[in-house]
Image (cartoon, rainbow, N blue to C red; front, side, top):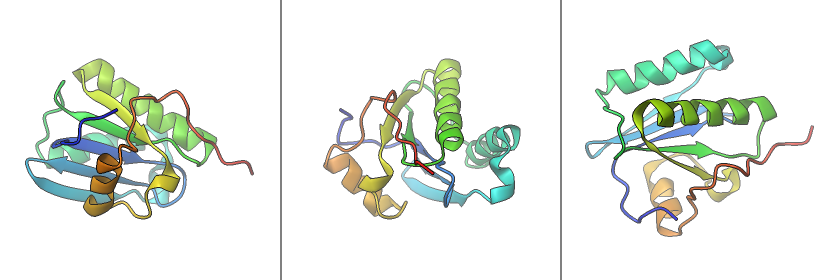
Length: 132
């Protein structure tokens, strides 16, 4: 389980529907909606990198990357997991995941609920895919 106090984190909410990034850094909170045209892997990585750079975020071992594990598109969920694991390898950041059903809307209040109710877990090996 994740500690109740999480200060600096990036959320990758990339499931194929209403994709977005959320960032909590230095007691500030930001959300970036990802346009559908950004679904290309290279563009997505650049979008995340630029989002972090814009807010002058230093990702290190004290930073947490939280990934939406689904349900969602197989490729979208796998891509977000791969990006999160890449960030961990490069920076030493911690990783965690949550299920789409545990949050109604991506905002700070709902993220606090996820943390307080211990719905954010260190288990990234159980993504949930939509059956189409």
